[in-house]
Image (tube, rainbow over all chains, first blue to last red):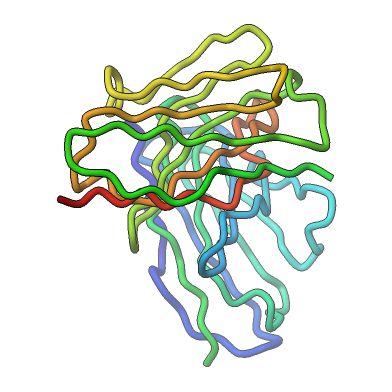
Length: 107
Length: 120
């Protein structure tokens, strides 16, 4: 199985900050990497697919980059509604595995 | 708008089975795959398997092979996940998630989750 490792596991940031979360795969997964946002008590919400594509309705302050084994999720200007946990997920081969999550908290 | 509505919370004893339903609306049910993902308390999501709702083909994570069955009812636009031989480690929130792209294998819409508690 492909192992997905995220860092940091948590971070504190202020509204307006630029935030970066990284995700590393245990082997090359091309650009088959997806990002999700999860708020307490809710199911995950798709934020980025294919490493850098935004689904309709996702604000452009979210962006993704990377290929191979190293990927990044960036929030350009953190908003109050962005405080949540973020997960990466590889779509290269089943079982489709998730990273351990990054909890973004209010500083 | 796309909606996935799941059945309610369940409490089961070890060794029992549970069957969770997921009713889809707002899109053509047979156009997208349906995946099942679970999340134990404080843990990362864990993919269990998926069904091609168009032809009924399924694929399961090796971890659950032999204990899980994913099925569907096109007339009811509903998918099901049955997990057998439950143990305490199966306590988790179970989600159905619609398959998005079959290139990137993303999950573009999720149900609200069904809490399954396994306890004697």
